[in-house]
Image (cartoon, rainbow, N blue to C red; front, side, top):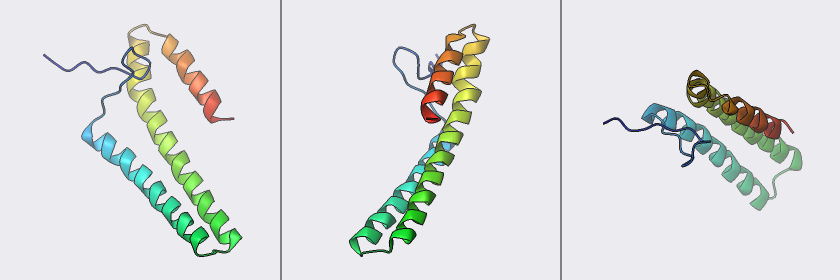
Length: 103
């Protein structure tokens, strides 16, 4: 029996990812985490404000890159599968998420 794959808006709100997909997403998050630790060190060591601001911008870009990758994965799998299955409410959910991200 094959394992049931569900998308985030299903009742148990889980999305099973391949090992490669997990690895790629976690790598992006760990990169941002490392940058944040660097910013913490800059604050602790009285770093120059513009230098810190540049690093904060880099973290923001890293998280935006993570969001883009996760959004693409979601569109290719969950949303596409739901549309094929006639579950068009997935489109509305995706639009709401996009509106929240683009505030």
